[in-house]
Length: 264
Image (cartoon, rainbow, N blue to C red):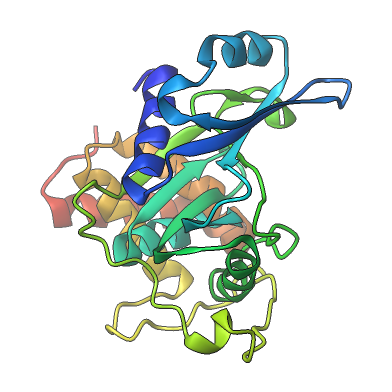
């Protein structure tokens, strides 16, 4: 997809989740912030954003403050974990750099105020190994289709979107104790090699199991196998070390057999 297509895909995901107004933030190279607040999705100054981004400004977005929204944000989620999350719950995964993790936007099934979103984010950060510093309830995420100058100007792209206007995705099942503040979630950043618990459905959510699910999903979606292999190398390097390239090659080859394709 072109850069503009990634932008539209992300905005369509927001719209399908029930978000119709957003705040935009432009962070200039000197650190100053320019804001466009409470803007309707159909009337965003995208040309202005592209010009600013071409001058090395960072481009951010979030659901507009001051409203209840059925969408929560997580930062720095491993690619395989993010893809598994949207496969199970619906949502939007945005890859912010080839080396790093994803921004993950998850539907909640009900509108939540900012304080409630923060509590849910705190709970989810512990489940998905997300950045515990990004659970304020109003945190900004990067807008897809623009360059991430913090990461040498790489493109921010939509990696996966599983939301639609028919509301077929139920969203997260949030324990009542999280929303009323009676249950205090534990937040811990999962380190390399730390397993993610197996899901109640029995799906393997260990790191290698998540890799396998992501690779199969990406190949079935038509992603180039070589690009899948490179992305897997980037995300698995910290835990697989010198075995990473062999591991990625074998995983992709096995997945190609599974989905009936061939590695060229």
